[in-house]
Length: 78
Image (cartoon, rainbow, N blue to C red):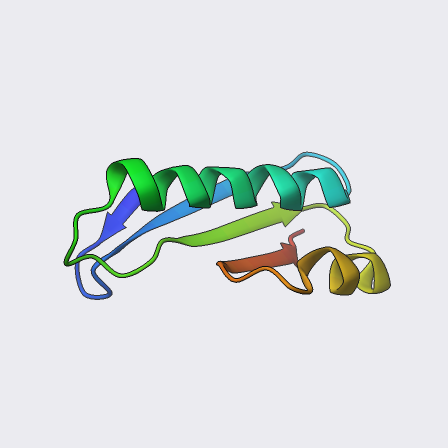
């Protein structure tokens, strides 16, 4: 977790050494909600969550991310 001074928000990054699972998305959503309610200051923007894994299942990620109000992104890295 770090604070992005230009965006005025916290950025949370979860680096997975395996395929991203729907539980990883739920876990990050929990971290974002906690950060928003307990860490962020009133003048901060909402935190951003990034989950990086070695693989991701596109249809699964679409469903896992659907309906989440937080700024949460999942991507594959090499």
